[in-house]
Length: 493
Image 1: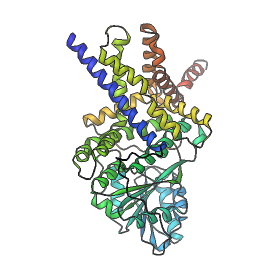
Image 2 (image 1 turned 135 degrees about the vertical axis):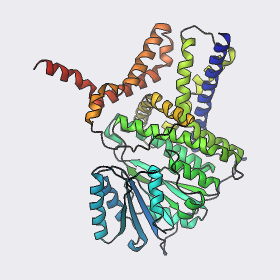
Image 3 (image 1 turned 30 degrees about the vertical axis):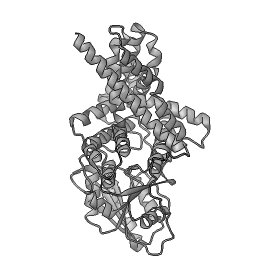
Image 4 (image 1 turned 90 degrees about the vertical axis):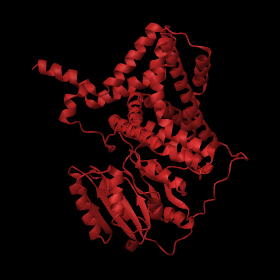
């Protein structure tokens, strides 16, 4: 029994320490973005040569990977055909692996664009081998273009996008790709979209900018970027063995000696998921994909002669950051005996718990607030609070994603629907499952803390509130609240 208690205390101490380290990592990135002082020991990254006015235009391939996107294909093709680039140098590929009527829409849209005089082709694979990575690789085999721009269907690049991005690649021959910043066309649609926008602004306006300024790899985000074809080839091409093929390729390119550029001032508006379930699916994929990339690439990162030790450490923290959800749920489960008073923490655990309690939220809060610089302070604070609560609601789903990655469990690449999900008959039969796990966990944790240690309820407010809020949002979306009314209506007939 003593050995079991020591094991529980050890695992809880390690989990709390990891959460503190992950928060400190985000805090360092926020400090690097906010501070104008650069430590003397930190080497300066090579200066980025700005783009010059183009006279000789290279061939550019624009790839549009689609899967059951509906009418979005028409919108993205309209934006792509408006790009300021010579038509004889612009090649468009619609990589549509759709299994629904979206394929018909794509064929009509491609025919219209081809009739307008553009080089455009539609590629449809009957089997989604390697998912998005496989579609991109299949398209590359049909093109000889030196530069490759990639857009998801829900983004709208401005007309000068290629002028500014390809121009930077031409001026800096050691760059593998140029990544631009995401905008949010439907930021104010709901509390959920405002929370997502705040989280993404923290990523793009703080994390990406800080990594770029420190000479760390600013990952390719899967869309709104342009790749150099030779960099893709030298890094080994697109791989489909992780759910984040974009992060995988960008890190492999860095390990092969390529740099990347992040253009924060070039914003491409996109559509945020409006459905709680769609957002949960997206975050599950990103969390699992990051962990998969860590398992795959960290040995190469630590053996790479092209990286300093501090860069290896920062890349490691970047790849394991999503595992905070897994460590978080371990802290909750392992901490229950201490909350109930069945176990007494030792000095080391007490010290680590105090440190984690003090710094645990500083890093995420700093990133969220700094990402909203220039915006009204009250709206930034409001959206940051909503983002923290709803992110806590992802605890169960994202912890499962991290666990599945650690044990090597494979899952399909599930696209993120940007419009509200239409509930199928199958989903209606299982309405009670939607959000049920979060609601059970939230209420159980609330009841346990109130019965065993009411004072602990305060420190668990964020987690309990997040689980209950996100569970209720999913239940509402699934129509669970309408079910009792439907039953009573039938009884009254």
